[in-house]
Length: 219
Image 1 (cartoon, helix red, strand yellow):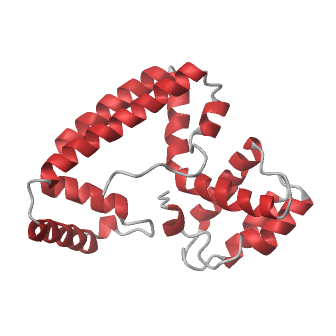
Image 2 (spheres, helix red, strand yellow):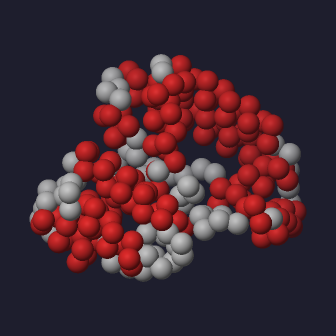
């Protein structure tokens, strides 16, 4: 439920390392902190999960979904996955352990980033992970398939900001055609005419391409 296999895509933190001018040693330390956090969370969850029968697991998952559906404060157009994980942690009684792991990880990251500004940049960067994944992989591969140069780091980050800004403006996350055009209009200041043309015809089509759910993004 929590773990994931190796990704065929670029390290999602690459731009973070570039922007903050991380050394190889800092990158290695960061990777170890994140990896250890995941391993600790997985161990706690699996220990609790291993004590449950299949019937009990289904009961708890159904209960978590019901709680989400019945709680208006949890209604948002983003992915249900993070909400389900949090609810399952509550139902399994492991929330305090998970919070302790998170607090310890945060303390290590604060020390690594060395300043509040850098740590805040990391938090904002992580919040935009879904958008950044889409920009780097969907838009980047679209440009490459057309024989154009990939997006530069500065173009990637600027385009992420534009997409996020337009996500904030969405009233209906499923109807996004107007916002697609807004992204293109604003992107023309940071992209070449050739890049804009390719993204307009190949990369930004699809009615839900700018939905919150697509990016697992909550403002």
